[in-house]
Image 1: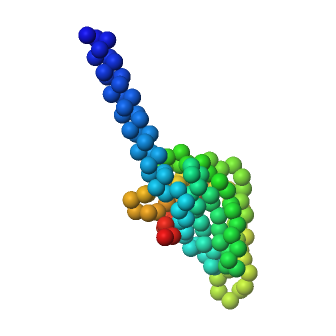
Image 2 (image 1 turned 135 degrees about the vertical axis):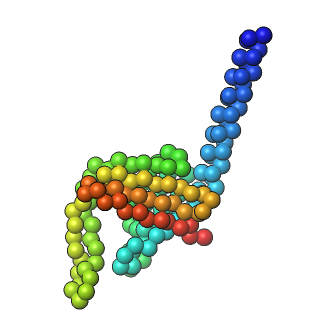
Image 3 (image 1 turned 90 degrees about the horizontal axis):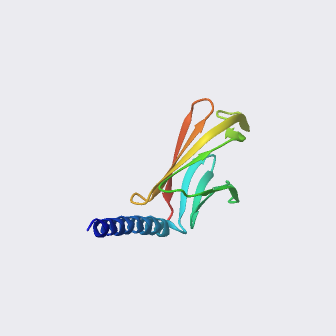
Amino acid sequence: MKKICLSVFLAFMLSLVLITIVRAQDWLTSIDGRRYTCPIYAGVTEVIDVRGKVIVRGEIMPDGKYVEVRRIEIEGRTTTIENTSKTEIKIPKTGNTPGWNKYNINSVEDVYIINVEDNNITEYSKYDNGDIIQHVFQWER
C-alpha cells in the first residue's frame, strides 16, 4: 500500500512539474518575435527584441541606424545580469552649449522583469555609485 501511495504521489508531483514547464514555455512562446521599445534621450530609442529564449538589446540612433548592444539569455520572468565592464555614456548637454557630456560609469547589475499581461519589460540598471535607473519598454505592435 505504501508503494502505491508513493507511486501516485510521485506521478502527481511529476505532472505538476510538467505543467509548470509547459506554462513557462507558453508565456515565452507568446512573446517570441516581439519588439519592445523605450525612447530615452536625444532621439535615441532603446530596443528589446525577444528571439526564442534570448533578449537582444539594442538602440535605434537618431539617424535610424540600429546598433546591437548585447544578448541576454532569458532565465524566467525575472532575469538578472551581473556586469563587470565599465561603460562610457554620452548625454546631450543642456542649454545653449552643443555637444555631449561624457561619463565613465560602472553598471554592476541589470534586472529584466517580463510582464506578459501588461505587454512590457522593465529594466533596472544598478550602478557603482548607487544609482538605479528604470526603463519601461512597451510592446511595439
